[in-house]
Each structure stands twice: as structure tokens, then as C-alpha cells.
Image 1 (cartoon, rainbow, N blue to C red):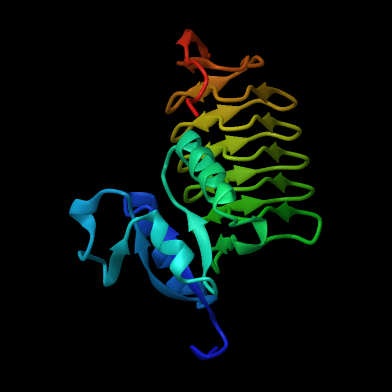
Image 2: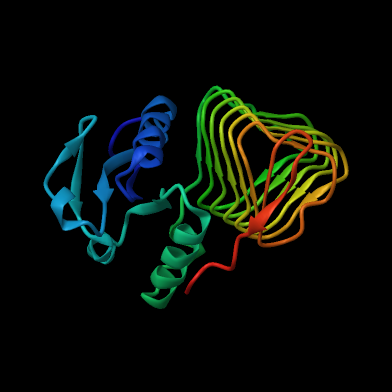
Amino acid sequence: MTDRVRQPLLLVGAGGLARETAQAVHAANSHRLIGFTDDNPTRWGSVLDGVAVIGGTDAITGVPDAAVVLCPGSGSVRARLAARLAADGIGPERFATVIHPGVHVPPSCMVGHGSILLGGVVMTTSVTIGNHVAVMPNSVFTHDDVLDDFATICASVSLAGGVRVGTGAYIGTGALVRENLSVGSWSTVGMGAVVLADVPGSEVWVGNPARFLRGAGLPTQ
């Protein structure tokens, strides 16, 4: 696909997830990546893995034909950015979805706008991934799993069938979740945890079997 056909793309944030997303964009050749934006002015003008940081998030309004992907690793930060951009008139139609070319999306599965699926992610059947969800490499979602908006799934997570991950929930690297369970909105499951019971909203659970550690609180606006 030539640069004349590919839509320009801006990645919001210049951290690790943004750099990983940039590599997925290059691999997919789906967009013409024109830069990162970041609200940390010390990053402006720098070049990360060959991609320039062109300015703050406000720079998005100056490139009206560019698609956008929110790349902070925190779901709560992505939620705040989405609300901020909506107030600036940047709606769902501006958000691209980045899927590494090594990821097969079966016809029965759905992936929402602004979501990121890095290499090695597996979806079996009837998996629903919401908007602005970040999925790290080699995670596995089996039948009828649902990931709500702004969820973050770290590398090598495995969800058995019928699992629901609530809005903004964070599941750490290598965690396992038994079938037909739920992880509540804005909760955190620690790395390597084995979840054998429903996790309520706004709680942190760790260990094998996973157990309550502390409250997580709600994201600030």
C-alpha cells in the first residue's frame, strides 16, 4: 500500500506501549505513522525507534486527516485522554485499531475502535474486545470472553471461556482466569495470579489462588 493510500496516524503517548504499537503499525503497513504526541515537553523533538515526538496532545487538532491511537499503558489515563479529545471534537471515527499482522481475528470476534493487539494474541471464537483496550503479546482469549473498554491485558495472560474483564481492569503478565468469572471494573490482577473466583470492582488481587490484597480506588477525572 502506498503512502498516498495509507491514512496518516498519530500515536498518543511516547512510552513503551506506544513504541510497541509503532512496530505493529510498521508490520501491518496499515497506516502511515507520522509521529508520537506526548504531554511531556522534554520529549518533544526526540526520535524514538525512528519515529519523532512532534509535540503535545494538542497537536492532534492540527492534523485533522490523521487517525489516532491512545497508547498509555494505564487504562485510566487512556480514559482521561479519550474524554479530553472528545471535548475537543475528536470522536470515535478518528480512532484507528492496530492489530499486528500475526493476529488472526475470526469472523465471530469483534475488536473496538482505538484498541491495540500486539503479536501472538489468540482469539478462538465469539470474543468481544471493546474500545481503547490494550492487549500485550501472546495473550489467549477463548470462547465468549468479553473485554470492556480501556481494559489492559499484559503479556501471556490466558482467559478461559466466558470470562468478562470490566472497564479499565488491568490483568498482569502471566495471569490465568478460570471460566465464567469476572474481573470487575478498575480492578488489578497481579502478574502470575490464578483467579478462581470473581474479582469485585476496584480491588487488587494477587497470588495463587488469587486473593484480595487492597482496594484500588476509582480513576480520577
